[in-house]
Amino acid sequence: GVVGGLRMQEEGNFFSKFTRTIVEKAKADVERTKRLFSGLEGLRGDMSVIDELLGYWNLADADATLQQLEDALITRDFGVKTSVKICDGLRDRVKAGTIAKPSDIRDAMKETIVEILESGGSTDLILDDEKPAVLMMVGVNGGGKTTSIGKIANRFAKEGKTVMLAAGDTFRAAADAQLEEWCKRSETMMAPRSNAKSPAAVMFDAIDGSLKEEVDVLIADTSGRLHTNQGLMTELTKVRGVFEKKLPKKPMETLLVVDSTQGQNVLNQARGFNEAVGITGLVLTKLDGTSKGGVVVSIVDELKVPIKFIGVGEGIEDLLLFDAKEYVDALFP
Image (tube, rainbow, N blue to C red; front, side):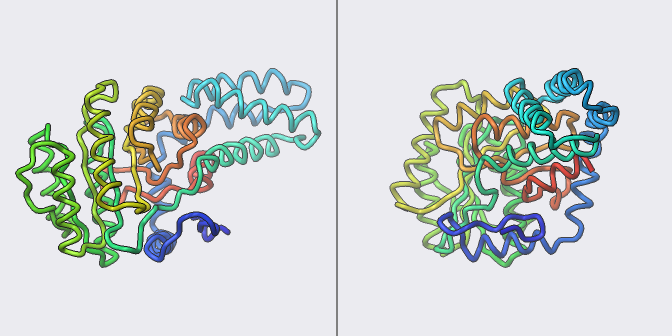
């Protein structure tokens, strides 16, 4: 069922004590709604056009209004396919007679968006209770991957978990230094230095290190040249293979970190990474810097992958566990 907005997983899905702790902690954080609201201010301002449109709603003009709504959603990066889906759903409700007044259509639209956001599957993190829980982070350079790793590591460390970070981005000298900086800030440890040259070999050593140190969590950074680079995708597949070989049958997160200010470009990135490594969840960064909140919805609709975290500010606490209903309520309060 639902607990305070954050969904608890049903049986049959993966659910651990570790995951439950993280969810409960987030739920108890009274500041989170405030952070979400202030972080999404730009988005909310942009969505107010939709509110004005729906405010003048009457049944006689239903078709014209829904056409305008469709255009307004497309402009806000909901994507054509998703915008049409939302409006078709509303048309059906109008025909069925369940929508009569402006507040009805607004509620119905919000419900439809929540349904799409939940169609990707559970937003709960896959955190194995058997050490180490593994998160492999992928994404294009500049999307906020290393920063997200630091913020996630910090969240686990605050729960008293031992966290190890593995620098698998062997192509970017600065990546190591950046991770080490986060290690200091979040009181986590770096994987033992590896002389290995290939990212897969680095990961092999990091997994050995995490087992030897018996850490609770291993978070792996990976290289992030562009998703169109075939070499990179082959390499990520190899890194993923190392986890499968060294930790067979281990449930793990493969999180794609994307910069939401990139709008619809993000979709192609996501498709490429999904084909290579099979993404289990998304981390959407920089939502405080965009006015196009629809991309969140169209990514889930297209890929059927859940969003796990959203970034709504620069602060270490500003990477929030995602909850569909909270997000939609913050956009359309």
